[in-house]
Image 1 (cartoon, rainbow, N blue to C red):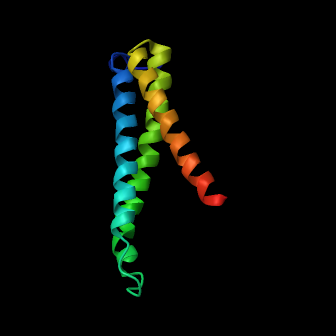
Image 2 (cartoon, one colour):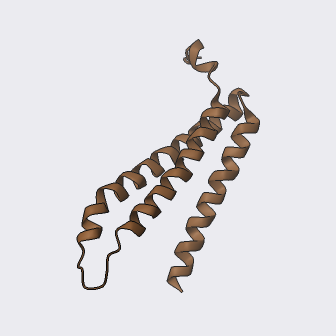
Length: 109
């Protein structure tokens, strides 16, 4: 095996759980930044332009933590290092994807 000995001992389940909580947190912060960008009618798009970098940063963190958590879940199950925490992280990510798909689906029709 090419994997170093130090990487085998990492608590992959806790890492997956932490990254999935970070994904939920970044989704919450992105929604809050989007809601804060709304101004009064006739104000133009100044609020959206002011918050666009915060929204993009939250979306980038959401994507990175989501895929990092998926990788950590797989490593936790394969190396048997925190399978319970990895299962909880997988459930949290499934709920996150379900929530996003419900919101997207309800806005389409």
